[in-house]
Image 1: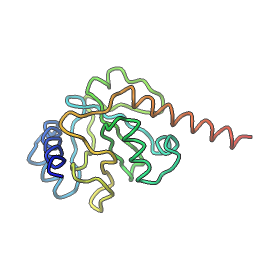
Image 2 (image 1 turned 30 degrees about the horizontal axis):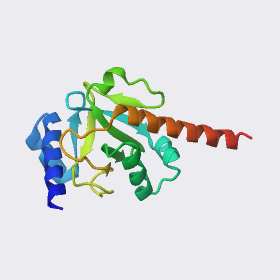
Image 3 (image 1 turned 135 degrees about the vertical axis):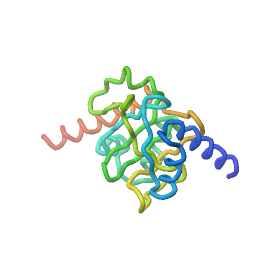
Length: 167
């Protein structure tokens, strides 16, 4: 437990480098559970519709989604914005320069993301975003190829559903 708390604090400190004002971002995390952080310098964020992710998993059950994403994305961090019905896989900052995967968008330079406090790992009444797969430490991000595979699995599942409903 102690080691996990150290990794969480390290991840929080690392994420705050992307804040315009780290003190203000800490206050927003404490008050609202979420703070706006700039994408493109430390990380990019691949935005995926919840429908796509749930199709890949085969369910929208929170625990099953978390387990699946952790396995497929090899422990890379994922945020779920339940209000916006989107998932965000945090990837290296360079991902935004070459990401061209249909049905998704990669937020890079000049984009902001509502990033939950590192201890918000389940739905929270203060905000609609939470970590489905928390960061495993400073700089621990998703491998872009694994995110692309996840998107492919989801697209294949949606195509199968469309084929079955069209028969």
